[in-house]
Length: 99
Image: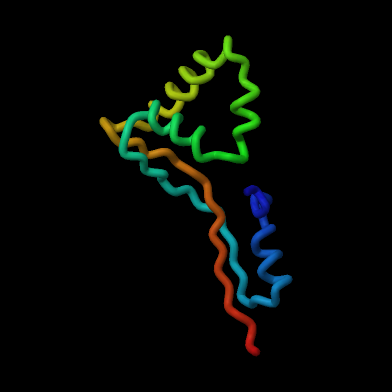
């Protein structure tokens, strides 16, 4: 999931694969969610299979507090029934090498 998280790693992989004119940049885009912060948090836990062990390790006594803090953190990006959460992504472009 985080294979290309390090700055320059995606560009390096493209160059290694013989692509030319490689450019890589990090940009921030809004992740739009139509619904509540609570529903986004529930959804995220369901679909983030790589994090299931982490979620499962939260002690039951702490679970309500964790849920509340995450939902409150997400709620700051709310505008009515819409969340617009800034996420950082890596965008890379390149030209295929001539055959």
